[in-house]
Amino acid sequence: MFEKDYIVVSVEGDYAYLRDESGECDEDLFIALALLPAGTDVGTRLHYENFSYEII
Image 1 (cartoon, rainbow, N blue to C red):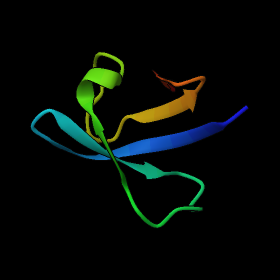
Image 2: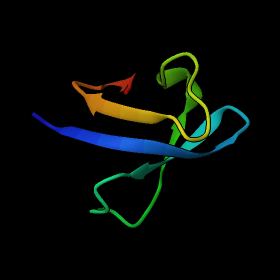
Image 3: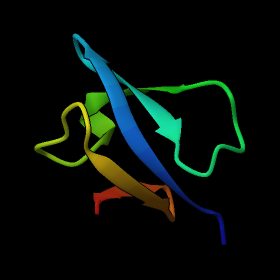
Image 4: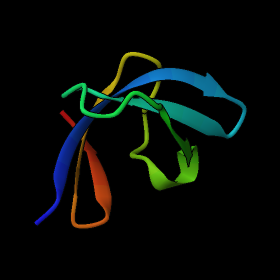
């Protein structure tokens, strides 16, 4: 099963940029805030698993 941890590096309008905490990927992930848990903001750490994100 695919799992990954991210940190929110910026929020622009209704979208957020997530950075892979493992450093495996150099590009930030651009994702709609509607797909992220309520309360997500810059600096929030997220865990992705089974097509969903949760705050860690």
